[in-house]
Image (cartoon, rainbow, N blue to C red; front, side, top):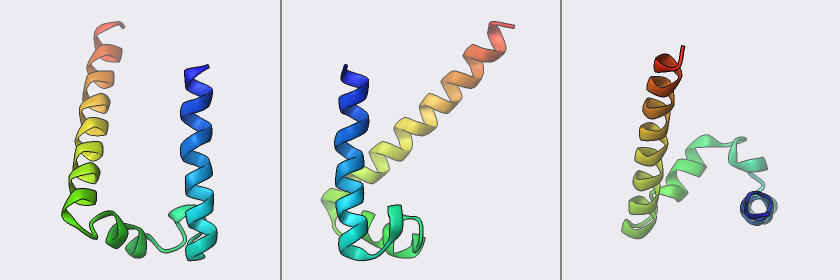
Length: 69
């Protein structure tokens, strides 16, 4: 249930932002997306935290997959 909610809520917000900006799913204009992500210090902190979390997840996943073989 939490997975479904975690998928639907951000997707709704991305769709609303995409319609408002005309930047379809925030991929049509990557530079505008990055400028928005780093528009102020608060959004920059969240973006850097997210990037770091994803990087740690990928490193952990790689090592887990490698050690389970």
